[in-house]
Length: 399
Image (cartoon, rainbow, N blue to C red; front, side):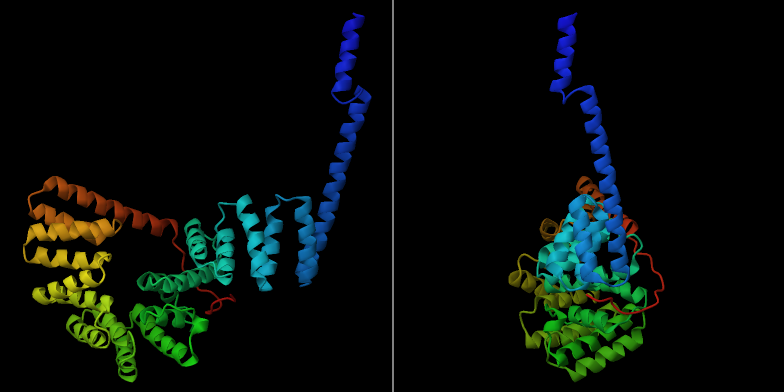
């Protein structure tokens, strides 16, 4: 019995002291934790007061002390990042938001702010990825942030030569009737295919971009006659400059004036015979007005100049399908599908070619791909609807 009692005492000591000492140690830990909580809340109140009274350097210093006490306090990292961003300290802001998204990976606002910081820090690829991720996750009804994200995402797409994708994003501003110089500049740069940052343009080029942006804005607002009238005036005023005739031609296509559009695309080709987008547009416009021989000539030229562009093969496939040359139509459309596996129109047309070639299984497979792509597009719109609300202002917020 004595040995057993002695063993228990030894165990208690090895576990951290006598029962009285263990009690004291637990009590001390709780007291220390309570004291830390009091200190944290006191410091937090001071930080909030400094932030609310625009004492930003003091507020940043206090919040940095707070996140040292509690490194997993996401709210603190958010405030540090936001205040540093507002002071144009984008490097340190990015670091703070990087901490935030580790703690709150499912909140789109964090990814939005990292993307905006990366834009300023010239990390363009990751900026585009994070802004797109933010829009996918949603921005919690913050319409101003949603507009800033959308605008910068469009600028990055323009820099990456994805002009049509940029215009699709910018189109939402027209649905909200939010016209501003910044939006018009971005639209004009997309229309004129200028892969630059707006601040790098000369003042006169920025003004031209705004004018073309205004024409595009009117068109997307369905003010078609006003839009075409302005495009016509701008083409006459800036004739011969890169992409001016092309931009007017695209506007004409959008309003079904394909013959006039072809004239403009050919004007563009007089200035630049290797202008692949203009060549492709001639091919597609010719198909719509049933000039199949010329359409095939231009589509083939586009493939020669840019063999990695699916649109040339797609145009060829459509011509061959109209001419009932089904083997060539299928070959070209399959090639287009291999380059653009996410293009619904390609698989829709390919299904028609298979069906007419008496290949029902292949037709069903192509239709299934098309249906899946359509469903994915619909789901994307539903999960990121960006509800339209009338805001108090019409401009782009700072940065």
